[in-house]
Length: 266
Image 1: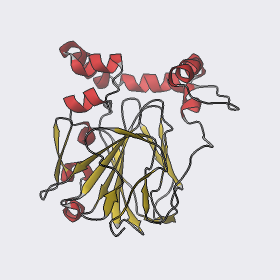
Image 2: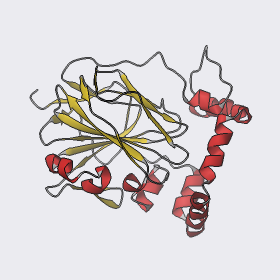
Image 3: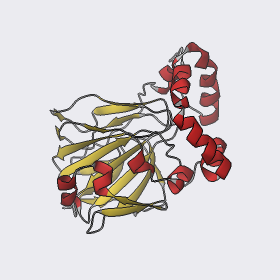
């Protein structure tokens, strides 16, 4: 499913737009946008987003767009069945397979897992594995949770640019290896070792993970994004999960905590 804003369609889908995008990124215009969204001048944007996306903010008040974006929710339901794999966030889910040479193909771009996680030794363990991509949109709840109980290793931050993650951008550039991202290994109880990667997007310089080198519980908040749509990627070893439905490159809407698969032994 494609959800390209008109502005993103122009910036990534036309020659003039790509030229303007290059200028915007070279002058770090995104930093000015961030300053605006953190200021009280951004307050009028809140009502526009609430109306456009039919967002329930009953009982909550905000002074800036950033405060609105980081809003809390009380209606998240977490499937706590021990062997059920859950979605870590709201968004659009698509599924891709890693081949024997740990390569994968997303929306016209060819990727090497080594470039994506920047760890040659680790990527060898995920040959023929499964890669789940969760693309969050502006309307989504931008907090994310742990998919199982287990142990959290240290995060590795990988510097990069901040391209949009909307469909047209992914079809134009290999954004998943260009954008700023964090990588961590989750030693899960039911799904073996899982690589989780949070990917920043245009305006989203902030990827906030709450802890590392510690134990976690299923459904516990792992962290959140700051200010706009982003992406979470989960990478599973071969034969470690069995998806509930036939998820493929066609994006399907999912919610945080929703049952999307199971451990392979079920």
